[in-house]
Image (cartoon, rainbow, N blue to C red; front, side, top):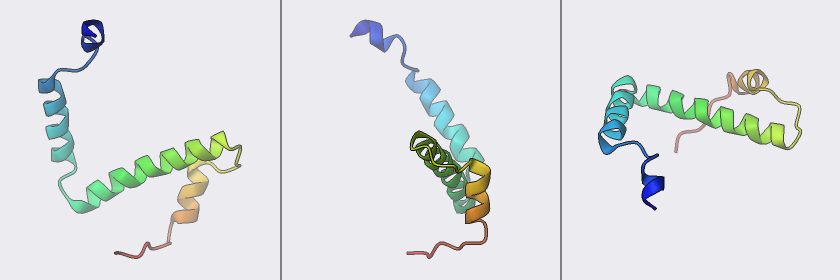
Length: 71
């Protein structure tokens, strides 16, 4: 188990990365945009895995202009 722990980042490193992310994403709009980017990437990966003919650019085109209802 000790060998595996050598490959983990330190708590200080993780804390610094989290603080930098929070500084860069300091508004709800920036957080939403970051999550949307990750979500689009995951959907694209899934569609590629399923052999669907949709690219990241095509997904962005399809989603542009569509408003998501707020809960």
